[in-house]
Amino acid sequence: MRLYFHPMTRATRPRWLLEELGAPYELEIVDVYKGEGKRPEYLETHPHGAVPALTDGDLTLIESSAICLYLADQHAAGGLAPPLGSAERGRYYQWMIYSVATAEPPVLKVLRHTQREPNPALADEGRAQWEPVARFIDRSLGDRPFILGERFSAADVMLGSVVALAERLKLNESFPRLQAYAKRLTARPAFQKSRAAT
Image (cartoon, rainbow, N blue to C red; front, side, top):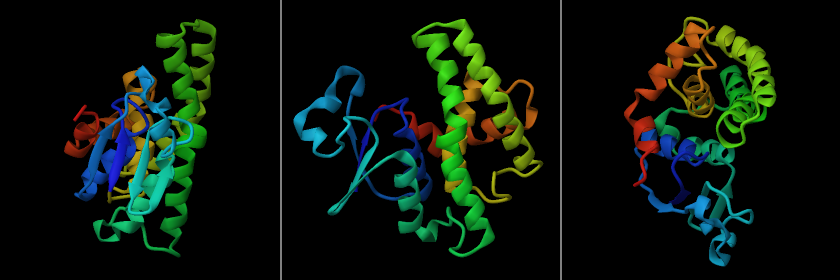
């Protein structure tokens, strides 16, 4: 199995999950910031020249959520996905998709318009959009350590990557439970390894 990766991108999600699972994999760094994603040979792997991409035998996958769903099922013994057909599995699907479809966009808006292309009005718009998202995650988390309850899952990888970025951008200050959640997740050795350049 090979993961095409660059630090501080969405590729950290499948790498974090692979580390949590203890699954063997090869890491190939693709410096998308220097245009390496546009090399013709890499475009055969990822048609948009982005990361992550995962190859596993004859299978090639793109999109961090799809890769994480696949990895959790392929390594079911790791216990990072609830049983098929269970109500918990339904909630798991919800958080896997909510993370990228609803939670991530306002956080990325704040990141973009505070650091890359400063625009205070658009940054404030992102902050306002994050508030109801953070409130929903906070309420759903309650006093449990992880989003599905007592056990860490692949949903925490997906959602946690967004909440951790929101924490770094100081978006969780009104939500102490989210701050504690981010702290729990970022303290995990697998999370820390997922940010490394090698």
